[in-house]
Image (cartoon, rainbow, N blue to C red; front, side, top):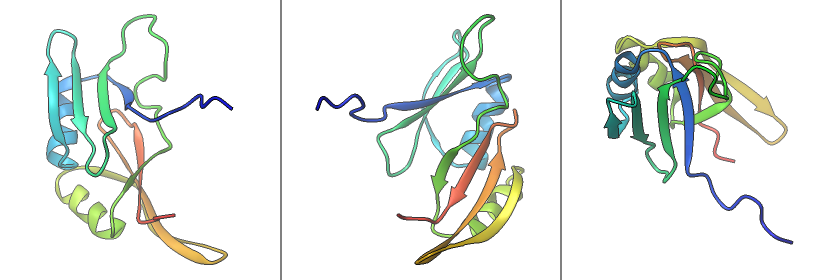
Length: 129
């Protein structure tokens, strides 16, 4: 059988204000910005522990994809989401779901959710499996 998906290169989100987004991802989340194209209002960030990139740009009129503020389902990892959320809040970020323990047969993990300035929401989890 031929593999249809062979990797994940990047996750792209649409944002409304590139400077606010850049500040959030650099200063609140501490991600390393590896490219910024001012003319295209596009920024690229490295995700620690991964070769996958997080890219963002202002959605052009008529461009397909999710509107700014509607992304969800992307999960970042941290060994202690409670500590991560406290630091994100201290840096001016928004925690939308407080850290909580999720139990399932055979284990448990902690997860929380945060939002960028546009309302794009990300989960932070310590789940490893």
